[in-house]
Structure formats: C-alpha cells, structure tokens
Length: 270
Image 1 (tube, helix red, strand yellow):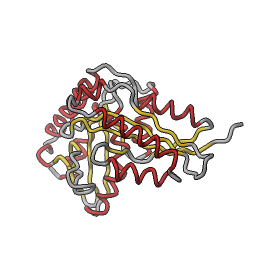
Image 2 (cartoon, one colour):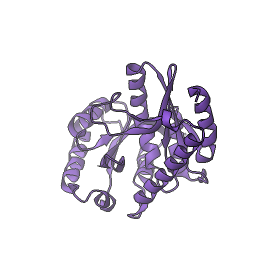
Image 3 (cartoon, one colour):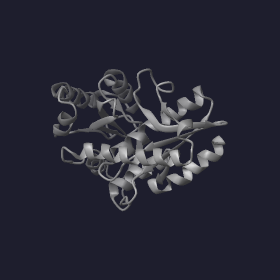
Image 4 (cartoon, one colour):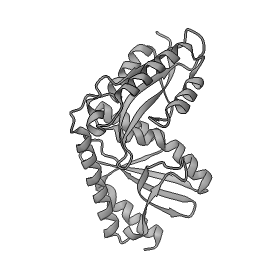
C-alpha cells in the first residue's frame, strides 16, 4: 500500500468586484510540509481567462501571467511551505486574495493537485457567475422575508468584517445579531450553479471568527443558507459543504428559514 502523504494548499483568487464579492479562482499552490527535494511542491493556474475578462474587462492578464511565472520559479527555491505562504501574502495581497491554508491526505500528490484544479477551475459558460449571483439574491430575499414575518428584520444588521480582519475588507455577512456572548450570523450561499461562494466562505471564516473572538469578545455562530432542491450527490457540492462544516459553519436550506427567524424572535424578545 502506498504511503499516505499530507499536503497543504492555498487558492489564489482575483476579486473581480469587491462590491458584490464576485471573484475568480486564478491559481492553486500545493505543497508538502516537509523540507528538502523530496517534498512535493507544485502550482496550477487558470488557462482560460474569458470568465475573468467578462467580470473585469480591465483586468491585467499580463500581470497575472507574470505572477504565475514568478510563483513557479519561487517553488524551485523556497525551503518550505511557511516561506511560500509568507511570499504570497506579502507580494500579492493587493492584487489577489489567498484562501486559508487547507490540508488533504493522498497517496498520489500529482493526481491530487489535478483533482483540486478540476474543482477550483471548473469550466463554466460566461453567464454562470451572473446566475450564481441571482441565486444568492433570491436566497437573501427569502431570508429577509422570513425575518420580516417574525417581526425581527429591523433588529438585524449586515455585519461588516473589516473591524475583525483588515481596514477596507469589503465583505459583509447578510444578517446578524448579538445575544449575550454569541454573534449569530447568516449568509446566503448559492451552490446550484457554482460552489465558489461556499469555498470562499470556508476559506475566509476562520480568520474572521478569530477576529470576532478577539475584538468583540463573543463567539460567532455562522449559518450558511443554501438553495432548496440542491443536488447533494454532486461531488463539488459535497466538497464545498464538507469544507464549510470543517470550519464549524452550520448549513441550512432556505425552507428552514422560518425556524431561524422564530428563534431570533425569541432570543431578541421581539
């Protein structure tokens, strides 16, 4: 039986539209957390920039290709994973966003990186992102309706994460309220057309949660509200859900919103 090897990876994301949180996965770096020439260390990058150009016509493709070349060169010389992550964070944070470092175990690193690339760089038609955005808006509207029907909508707020991450961070949770030492958070995540929003949420949430505990002195409790009628047998959906659950993100369908709204009414004594 082949030896199981632990790998760690980060996804490089180009934020196409900070106002709508739309992004495109442009790179994937996978390393084995061991030093020396025997350690696995490779990168994969998006080969078709059409989707990115649709979302951001002004994107500098030559710049992204230069970043790709530099990362490939750095992988040949950096002594370990920690040095690579530090390079990515310090060199490119103003251009692209890094996911949280994630791990996996495999007996074939070469096959595993191709599997990860197939998940994060899935081929989509140009309208897929727009349809996913519509799906999020529909979920968000149903969430709002449920809170309104329970009489608590005016007591809930959008929760910006910049106080807990970095100044200028555009991300906000859709709905939130605080009860005692907990901050209840709700985020619309549409996975029917595209699981990227779920992957991004799983990647970003650990640092956000850490910041909330430190700054707000409260425990965040995040629930991702996903589409009704979701095909839970799809491998990409299973992958996104598993990543969210690993980061202690609760998962619920839109049809369950009445339960959450009623619980909010009781907790907020509305």
